[in-house]
Amino acid sequence: MSSFFSCCIVFLSVICFCTKICFADSDNLQDTCPTSPSAKQTIFINGFPCKNPNDNIAPDFKTSKLTKAGNTDNFFGSSVNIVTAADLAGLNTLGLSIARTDLRVDGLVALHSHPRASELFFVSKGTVLAGFIDTQNRAFQKMLKEGDVFVFPRGLLHFSLNAGYDFATAFSVFNSQNPGVVGISGAMFKNDLDMIYKITKGFLSDHFKNVTFSGSSSLNRQQFRNLNPII
Image (cartoon, rainbow, N blue to C red; front, side, top):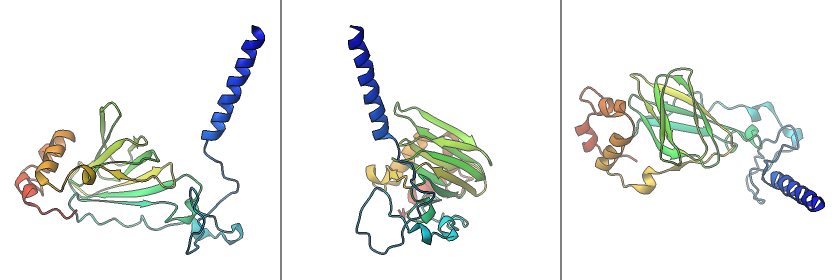
């Protein structure tokens, strides 16, 4: 009996060990692996082919794509610029990417998710209301000031809203070189302003209801309904 029990323990240990190996992320086999700039990709892998290590140079690991604010002259008053391994060669195989979010007054980044990454959201300027919804439909939201950090767990719907009276900027770091973006607004609803108004009024916060659609705001309720969407 004890021999059979010991065999079962050994068998389960081997299964657990093999399962851990199969599902673990692969470690780098070299120090760096900048994306190869080849014009035509003939081999498709989970990631990007690497350059010849002898050809690696310092500019492979530097980008200036997040130095300037994005264009917030759109329906939601927001801009999100994500830099992945496709944009910054040195990110390849490191499991990282970065983004910049710009929000004008009352600007909103609508509900969306990242299927392959969690997100660290760092507020660099302004005041931002950020939150997410878990799988039990519970909402978690917090007012963030300059220097605050909020975590959006992988795959969960989340949003950010400029809750201040000045331009807001935030930077994000993802634990994937290609986090992906899934938005629900375009997939579920037509560009119906009354529908968007009802959704945002009921979900976000008292600030969004009382400020974004107040008469003193840059966008009151009647103006919101009369706008022609550009998305």
